[in-house]
Image (cartoon, rainbow, N blue to C red; front, side, top):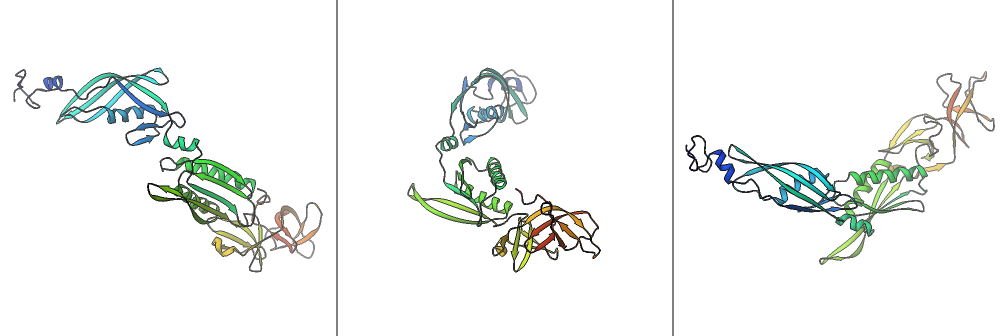
Length: 341
């Protein structure tokens, strides 16, 4: 084949040799400047498809693909660039565009300027305005949440929202109310998902109640309150369940009760132990004495009172963690500080 331009023999592309073809055909239509909005709050960039959190270099590459027209007949254009920062919102870019046509690869270099326009994304505007659609409430069943539970649940919810794939997911505010926590979240779906995750993680049950908020484009808009109720007891509590005295050794994913008299453990769903009632009890590391009778006697560290321990420790240990109740002293399977948080 001969090039119709210079007469050179060899492969041709639309009648032209590779040299003449690349000389006559630009890969892209290079812009003098590229403008992009960036959220001053979260750092997201605004693209044709919406706001997205990307670092500056990845954002620039995506802008090239969106904003720079590819010239025919090139396809599958890739971009690389070197940036020189003029100031915080202006970058001088030296760009290389590589286009492909059939088996020919053509490289076009150009310079442009990336101008970053500070703005606020839709999500941050709503967040600053304390916008919310859903409410997540976390309460204890017949009790207030402990300080440790409040801290843990706050951290858990914030971490889940940060990892949420839903665009624009946020908590507009958190409130510590009498007995628990309220989270005001960006969407009803987010509130429902968080409620399920909190219930799964902390052993609670979930109920939801929608409330008509208004209308949008002719459709009714509801705000949904998702309520998570944590069990009326926590790890370390002593409860009476079906006339038996037991200590709570786990609350998730199932409630595990250990019979204090026999040492046997049984697993329950949360709804199966709603009738259990918490009892006052102490748990501490006690000195164990063994009189001639062969009994194991636990000594209260403050009063000095001694009580037989049930069940009797298998090993001839000098100390053991004991649950001390009005009904007697029982060997515990938990650490001495299990009920302190």
